[in-house]
Image (cartoon, rainbow, N blue to C red; front, side):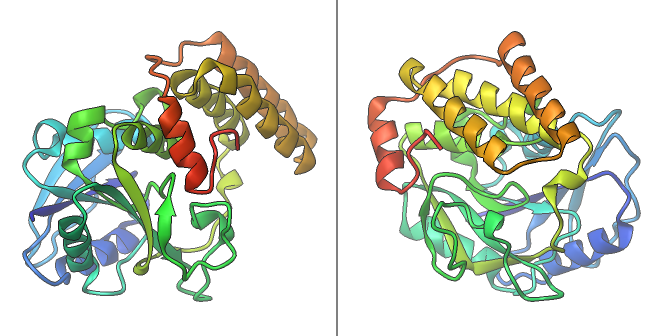
Length: 293
């Protein structure tokens, strides 16, 4: 099973990027070829002994999903040059040399397994943030399980998933692109696992550090529902998230940005609408996360 890796960078973390690439080069088993995508910035020095790197330099910052899609296509249409792709944040690091081999074993053992979400660990504290466990019952990050979404910068995916359902939604730019792909994959019959034994070290940071966070989260939440949910569930899903947002009491500026994004999500094109089957709704429910939350 041939494994490649896609790393998206804006060129502003050269030391962390080199450490990540070195950790990829140290993985057990056959060598992993890397596609390094410069998202609107020149690529820094990346020469790592024993590592083959393909490069893509995008002329502007096209966002996370479009940047990762460019990395997929650098491995051939839909990533067809390889069987599995790792997607790794440029400030992450694989602390264990067996992660790629564990991925090979997991995909070989389960032909319906399409995506694996890794456990993200803060290297300073050794802890995993609750939001990095992609399920509602997130109190025990050491418990592996089937899940309904995955972590964008710490995962492995079969390239046959992309061949069947397409890549990440380019226009999302940032936020919820993983869930959009996950729902399409689940609707096509694939499964997603969260594996606590597959670890990516990554500093603990707040997602709200991004200036566009509140607007993108709200806009893309609306797009996600409009694109993927049966019509009956769209107002339920968005109503629940509106209530949760108010209960979380963001700042006034954050709330204004959120409502601006919410309106934008309704007023702008969301891309092709392909509502999931009701049996997929039931599958998501059985997996512990019905698509209303």
